Length: 122
Image (cartoon, rainbow, N blue to C red; front, side, top):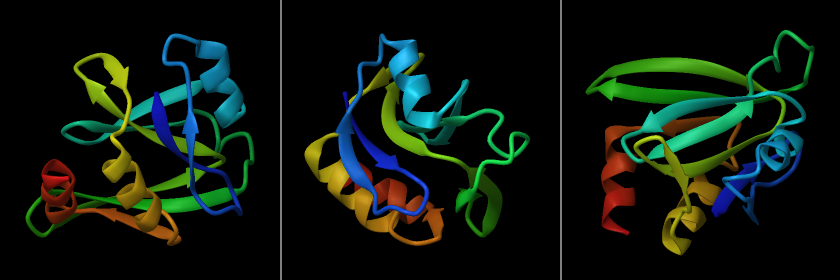
């Protein structure tokens, strides 16, 4: 599946990951994976023990749950963003991947209701 990989200290890039290969996903995040829903059809895969294990800070993710209400998460270590369809991890489309790559260049990544609307349109 096509994902946006955000390694610490590097520019985000598009990678291919086998959603059926747990070890491959663990290798991208250097440990046990945690799946976090960040939008209706998007999730982030990160190291579930990144902060505890002293991994370097990567990004702050800001999620807008309802208009004007934001939740903040600091992510430590590498992570990637992919789509999901219920319990299944799925590939990002080319336009989705390019758009997510562009917003993941910042230290703080805001996933607003407008971002979700834009992704549904591409």
